[in-house]
Length: 97
Image (cartoon, rainbow, N blue to C red; front, side):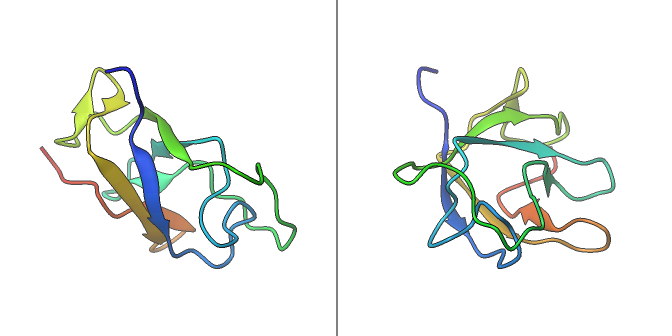
């Protein structure tokens, strides 16, 4: 794999990286509570990241995901949405293996 999957959608309003799309250079998918949390989520009103960037999945720590191959995401792209419980954002592309 020479390219990382793009974050094709982020619908999390309260993330400092989300302003008309995810502007983090790369995100980390984490979590172990049954959902795949976006480990890059930062609950700030201040906007950050890079102006002209298509965010990518830099690492996936969910070894139980069907798209996880050696801790790398093999999905074509991922969608990030509001989290549940204590998680602010989740990877909606996550599928248990």
